[in-house]
Length: 439
Ligand code: ASP
Image (cartoon, rainbow, N blue to C red; front, side):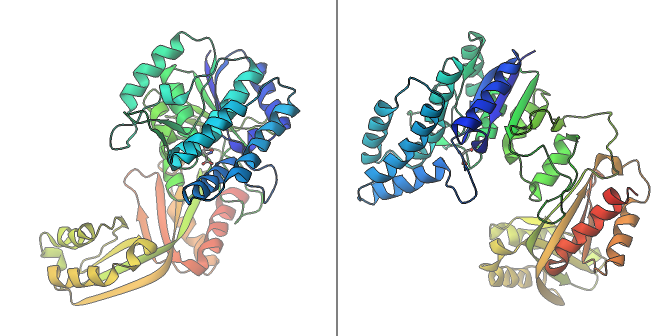
């Protein structure tokens, strides 16, 4: 059994959190490859080391004195090192970081130091060898992750190592310049390492006991999800549910390696298993509910639209020309609506409207804003009758007007458009009917 364990920032924010992580790692021999994040928040209102580094580097390139800010960052590490009674000094590393900041080594380099240094501390504490991610994780010239080169180098390197600490979040470009993934990217590194060593399991240790059925800011104490498939997760993550970085599933998915989301502060909780596919019946008909506000819709009407071949293509080409991606396109005989993200659309709306007029000469064109989309996701829906009926009656009872309905062809999700003001109530109504009332 071989496991890759990734620890998030809050799991490594202080010496006591480090101790928890280390005892989790030592509890099982199979936990051999460790991917740490940078120290996160120790308490509400605290600042993540990654953000301190960004800020410090900004000061440096602004030509101002950044010594104080860098010392504050070193103090974060020293507090951990002292708390763990380690005989380790990061003075040399901080001197080098200072020099590189002076030379303008870049924002990516600056941010990556959070994980790099935490990796050194973690390796010293565990007695594991340290592997600099810059030597094994690669990006191409355009800054895209180079999965094949990485997989070749990383798997060859780790094949010779019984155990290792590989810092998350960054890698190197062809010339050696450091590049990071987007924020939260240590999740991706963990997945890449799991693929490279052909792990049996990728454990992602964070500060919640797995995925929740819905957002705890909307429903108080929602249940957690035991098992979720990659596809369900992707639907929910796209709609805003965030525990794991969106792109973290791809490397392990290609190898069929499951991900287990676990809680460092509650290691006995089983967390959520993310799998390719499962025979396990979900506990409820639905697996999860997520949603987002901030959508706009462009409604187009034209008599006999149905017989005008190429109508949809022409409309969508206007969005394409303006660099706007669409979310959904519900349509009727003589009507078609295009749902887009409002923030992306706002500055280009007049251009888009003019473009549609030019392309298809509609009888009527109208725009709506402040719409929200709610995604009800579940592999169980395909084999259950009446799911849509129950959703709609729950919303009707809650006095919520449905503005749009879209069931994906995978029968894995039903997307419902409502007014933004009804968003939270819609999620609560759906949660209540499926989870609380178990209908
Ligand atoms: N430390 C980075 C961030 O704050 C990456 C990570 O934690 O995954 O985004």
